Image 1: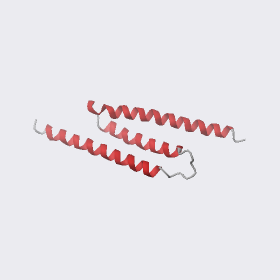
Image 2 (image 1 turned 90 degrees about the vertical axis):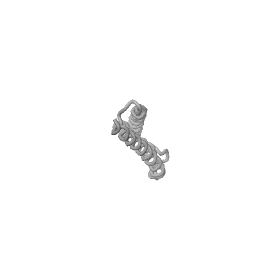
Image 3 (image 1 turned 135 degrees about the horizontal axis):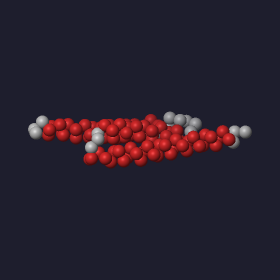
Image 4 (image 1 turned 45 degrees about the horizontal axis):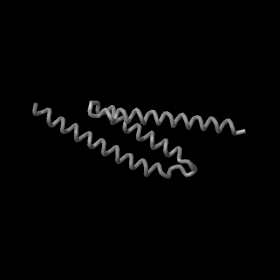
Length: 103
């Protein structure tokens, strides 16, 4: 039973470290994707790249720590995945609409 307590502390420390790294990567993604695309006046590519990177990071976290106390990560991943798919569909629709008015 004593071996189980340090294992829980190790898991809690790993979760804290993972959450801190995700937050750091989020801040770096905001900085990096802020001015990457010069000829994108609406910043759609930057928003999509940022949202995709955050969705992947939260997905790795959600599937890495499976437990009742980390169910919030799975819900956040599902919400971000739905938003990413909607944004991808919107980008595809805008591209196809632009092709229609090319003539």
